[in-house]
Length: 237
Image 1 (cartoon, helix red, strand yellow):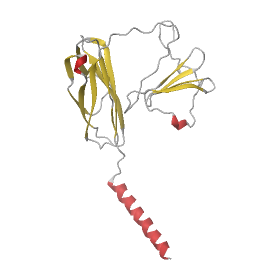
Image 2: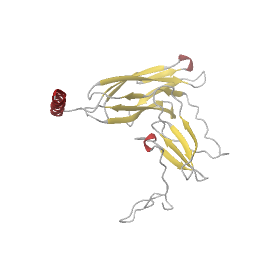
Image 3: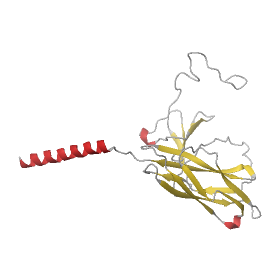
Image 4: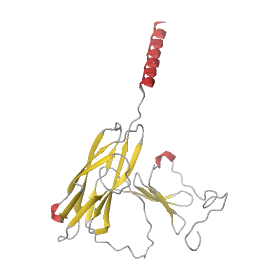
């Protein structure tokens, strides 16, 4: 990176180092995996802070791979515990100031083994956690990371929500994409209309099952019938 913050690429070369400097591998390797958001940060003492986003697991490891500590996101108590990242704040550094948030959301949306084109439903909750005199106006931002399915929200916005009103349940309906054996994910962005810095993210995920074509199913059925007949033949002998 040059003094202007730009990256240059020399012809025939690659960005960054030509080889890996350090690799962390869990034991067994399959126990530590995320198909999407995660991250790592090198600490001043040479250790590495790692976040496994899908499972909400944080850990610090030494250069030799020894785990110093590990922590699992406990929220929510039921459902997905996904997180986007973890940030190291050095001791003595001034913590970010609170932005007097009023908006709070809870819940996540996850569906598995869904037939392509089928309509599925779910819900999440919104509430005002500001001071007792605060009034929250909120909406669901139509510009999210979701570019699949046909979505509807009831309600999709609200006005004058006060702390004493408790939680508002947003009911969600989505038509699954007409695609077999696929995984879809993204997030729903809920915003405080009066404060652009006050927002919440609801993670979503949907999986469609593996579908066997009628031809393959017929061939499989014939093969199983053949094995059954062959087994009976050996029993008679």
